[in-house]
Each structure stands twice: as C-alpha cells, then as structure tokens.
Length: 124
Length: 124
DNA sequence: CTAAACGCTCACACCAACGTCAAGGTCAAC
DNA sequence: GTTGACCTTGACGTTGGTGTGAGCGTTTAG
Image 1 (cartoon, protein in one colour):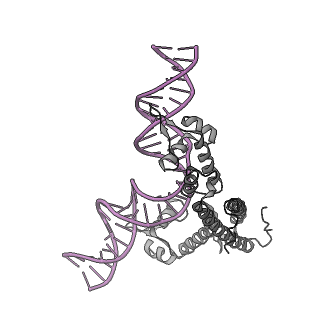
Image 2: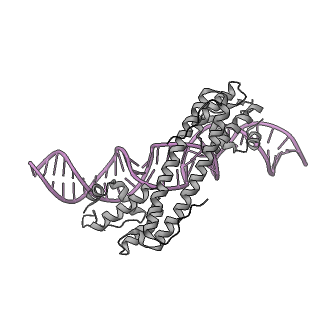
Image 3: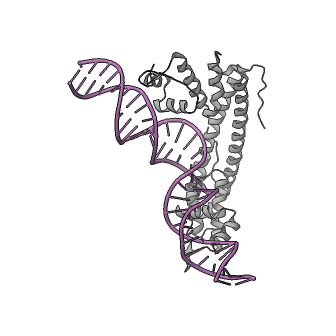
C-alpha cells in the first residue's frame, strides 16, 4: 500500500511516516515510480509506535519495540530490550511525578501565603 | 549597576536578563554610553522570576508577579492577578500529575504483560 | 598606551515531532 | 488532454529559554 493509505489506516499523517522512516523506525519498499510501498505488517509497526507515544515515549524509546516486532515477535513487548525501556520509563515517570508533587507543594504554600483564605483543593 | 553585576547577584546570565527585558519583564535605564543601568529593586524582580521558574512557571506566568512588585507591593504574591496565576498553575500541575499517573499505570500494565516476573516498584 | 574585561546588537543553534509550503513527477478518470 | 488526487524531496516554522559567537564600542587597571 502507498503512504496515504497507511497514514489513514494507522491514523497518522504521511509526514509523520516519512519522519519515522527518516529516523530508521520504518522502512518501505519503493515502487518503480519511486513511491513508498508498505505491507500489512507496517500497520502494526506504526500502531506500536503510536501507542507508545501516547504514553509519553519518544521515538527513540520506541525503537527496540519496532525492532522486536520486525524480528518476528508477535508483540513488541516480547524482547528484553523492550522490558528494559519499560523499566527505565517507569523510573523516569516516577521521577517526574515526584518533581511535580514537590512543585505543587511549593506553589500551594505560596498560594496560602498570598491568600490565606483561598481554599486549595486538588483538581481531581 | 550594570548587567554583569545584576547577573552575578541574581544568579542568572546576562543573556537571560536581556531576554527578560525583550519580553517586557524587566526595564533598565540606559547610561549615556548605552549600557543598561539597574537599581537594587531589580535584584528582587529577577529573584522573583527565578523562584517562579524554579517551580515550573513560564515567563508569561511570572509577568503579574513582576508587575505587582513594581506597583510597590512588598511581595509579588500580594496582587489578585498573582493569586489567580497560582490557582491556575495549581490546576495545571494537578492535571499533569494525573496524566503522568495514568501513563505510569499504563506502562506498568504493559511491563507486567511483557515480563510477569518483573517487580514493579515505585522509585521513591 | 594597551590589554583585559566589560558592554552593545544581531542572529543562528538547540530539543522533538512533526506542520506546512514549494515545486515538481505520476496516474486514473472523464 | 486535462483535471485532480496522489506521490516525491527539500527546507523552513513551531515552542521556551537561553548558549554561543560575531563584530563592534567602552571602561578600567596597570
């Protein structure tokens, strides 16, 4: 299939697909006229990338998952490199949460000083 | 005082001070030779900006605080506009924390699937 | 007098993941 | 044969807060 169809099926822009290719995440065959030619498996690759990005992974983070899928595994999760990325990201997320909580505390303290009567309720 | 001294005293780069000025946060008198001329109060303005940025505020967020100080208040917190920014940022931080927690949950779920034996402990 | 240390104004570089043109080639339908 | 939907590469714009350097003038210590 050509880039437009893959883009529609995967829910991304053609520009994004070219960007992924440029960064070595997705390869495409070329038709005689120079058009990119994708197969069914590529739909899965892009889906994997998007689902990872949806939880804050970078393209770099997604690389091992794509490699894992291309190596023939049914899931991009099935390789130790992927597991390692999950663990690293988990630690990163925890660190970010802690930083944010610390900031929240700081801001709440300032708000109390600035406006003692102001109710500080967590937006939940 | 000139820009270098203010930079040292406030713990920022001269470049940053020029940037703040460019964005209307800090004004400087100009000496006859064109050099910026700051007074003691500017040390406090910059300190206010830096302390806000340290908790994740943008320069835009800092604007009302600086205006408040320049209006003669002892603290940049003392104006209703500042309080409003605190409240908005608090809500933003809460939203970010929630998004991160949701992502963490998602990643932890994937990690469990990928590696059932892997311990998932929060980095604390 | 001179050299270091400072100041000035541009203006590009950075990070990520694309969006959005530009300027063109290709291909099916009418 | 021409419209229009598709494809190609290339290259600049976005966002925030600077870092860095060029190319220049000023001040100050020795």
